[in-house]
Amino acid sequence: MERTVFFLDQKEMPSRWYNILPDLPEPLPPYISPATGKLATPQELSRIFPMELIKQEMSNEQYIDIPEEIQAIYRTWRPSGLHRAFQLEKALDTPAKIFYKYEGSSPAGSHKGNTAVAQAYYNKKEGIKRIATETGAGQWGSALSYSCAMFGIECKVYMVKVSYNQKPYRRILMETWGAKCVPSPSTDTKAGRDALAKDPLSGGSLGLAISEAVEDAVTHEGTHYSLGSVLNHVILHQTIIGQEAQKQMEMAGYYPDIVIGCVGGGSNFGGIANPFLKDKISGKHKNLRCIAVEPMACPSLTKGLYAFDYGDVAGMAPICKMYTLGHDFMPAPVHAGGLRYHGMSPLVSALYHHKLIEARAVFQIPTFEAGVLFARTEGILPAPESNHAIRVAIDEALTAKKEGKSKIILFNLSGHGHFDLASYDAYHQGKLEDYEYPIEGVKEAQKTLPKVSL
Ligand SMILES: *Cc1c(COP(=O)(O)O)cnc(C)c1O
Image: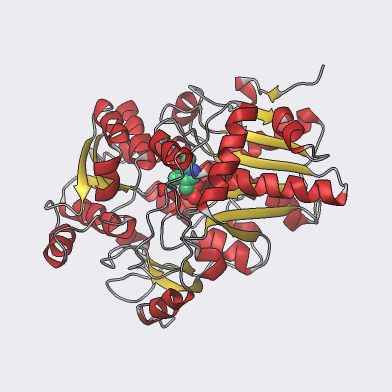
């Protein structure tokens, strides 16, 4: 009898995060302060982040211990299962072996809890009483609301207005965990009021909601800001996924040829890929391929510019070098709300720039086709974001079939889609559209980049 799920004992849960920064071929370009145009100092960053996270952001330690208080909460749902997709393989009639790491078993239903818990912990330790953040479709907001509840911290969430209006269930989840959630643009901040003055009907964007949350943090005593993706410390916290997957793949008796993850800000991809990339960089598994998958409607890696850009609309967040579509990018209304950020993590951007990883952009409708096939074979209903990873896993399995090769494919199933049923409904009714980001948009974006002289 062959096993379909590989579980680790709780005492085998990794007790350290893996930091890829010291293993990069070149140091990451620094963060720039939007206020001074010069290098952002830890002191500046400490107005919005706890010092422990700032240290992690710039750390040159290869491993960082996970405090026991964080491990205790991780153990609520970790180690997560690694599944062999036998049913999917059979449906595809492929010689490839497909594995997936399932991160939907966390309380808020995605990988985001891995960093939310850690961030709430370090803020609590520094005496912070309140955290402000933004959320798109609500996955990050709900993960942070849950984590703040675990540590007794107040949580204020600026939720992109279109999602606030169209997707009430995650807001209700946040409120149930005790958070306060308002639609962005809101009247609670200057950034929000300015946006409303320009366009009273604005549906908002992630970049704008970030501006509101950062402004909230700097204008409220005892308040910090928290970001659910993009930054190095976020990806660091997600590396528990890849480290567990390494042990579980070993239990299964295989090493992956291809590791796949969807990318919004890059954290679940970095989380699963980085521990494996360590083996690629060291030469132990030189031929390993890692593929980051993004929507055609928001193709930062495949069509964006590698340049210094603002992390938000109002230019309050640190400027960093990343693949970007321009900070005032307004995404098409694709259903994978978590993949609509204008930029990409500086770390994942650097991995791509150094050709350590590949990137692929996919249309929305084929991702739902893949997600539905996955649900009908493996049973789990994936988040629309995760469907992007599934699409490419299936495509790679079909390529393996054509070539008659038995490839080992591992992908990250970043979350479940139980709050995204309206999107599945739209797909079933044939109401989804495919959007392709126009290349002219990139030229426009070029004009809005901040001037940085180092
Ligand atoms: C937020 C989210 C993503 C995208 O964010 P990354 O930081 O790129 O991982 C992907 N999948 C799910 C389920 C999400 O909630």
